[in-house]
Image (cartoon, rainbow, N blue to C red; front, side, top):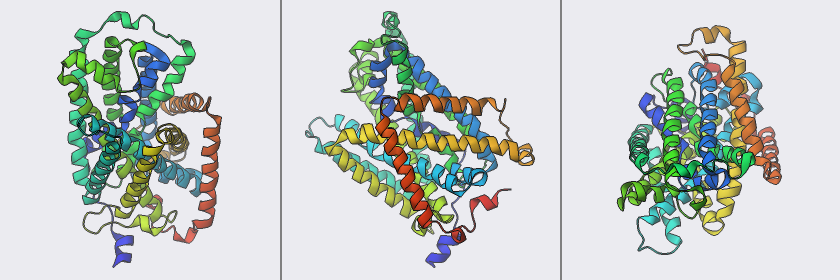
Length: 453
């Protein structure tokens, strides 16, 4: 019975455009925009607004570049399947696994951020232990929601993201009256180098929206994939740029600290005493949506797809016969994230600094391979592309812009941390060794790639 379930049961197609949009917007923001934005402001001053906007544009370019192949090959493995088709099995495995691994690494840091924000609501609970406790509690809740079913997790994500966007829009609109234009006079206090260094920080804040492509096997209408890719990008680009403009207009850049979210301080000015509560609730939602449909949903779907194609143990390819969710993958991700939370309670720098950099490296690798696959798709599969309901405009403009953005992110992220890059490359070599030892071509049956029309 288990063997039949493993080989024949497929995911349920019950995700609509609104769910995909919420997945993209919710997967974008978490600790990067609320707790770590202070670092970007300290690095670039008021010009961090433009730096973060440019980072958001690069994400938009990347989304448009991938939208075409997403609708042409709508599978759970996303970029893993695309890259395998055009560059080969190893590169396909690397692309998918790197993206999933990045989300697993994010699980620890964002969960810790969620625990920190939750502790703010309970000042009577003193001691750092409560940050860890809250982080583990909500990590477990979001894992159970994903196990219970894609539909319930997606609906929860939708409601949370609607509340998130509404909160940020209200902050941006009502905060306009409190802006002091003098706060923008010292535009680049640390010069061009400070401005350029803030772009990778902005990219970290906007990481994750590409997660939409992993919903291909559960989307009702594949045409919704490119729409969601583009519109989720437009949503977070507008809302968070406006909110950051108001933030910096209220609080001078040299008064921003990384001890707490500068949004909390600004919200006190905009909304009064209740402001801190409101904005911290929004920050809580932002972190929650990252874990709910980022860490758990995205990574488990990639593991599921790769297990079905013989790259990972069959353990990850199991679907619960009732909920049609990859339960084993979700449990594995929960264990990893819980371990990272416990490590972070002792050594937070390892989680917030090293893991964040390794996450960025992993996603740079995955994005680069995915964009190359998208270019080859247009070049080698003209007949397929002609039949698509949506075609990428101005080709090859957006793939080129996407690759330029990736190069800028790579340079800005690893210029001052070469050993982090070395450790990332060592991880790739270790993954290649695993691939050579574990992967058996004869196991690769019933691949998503073979189902492409």
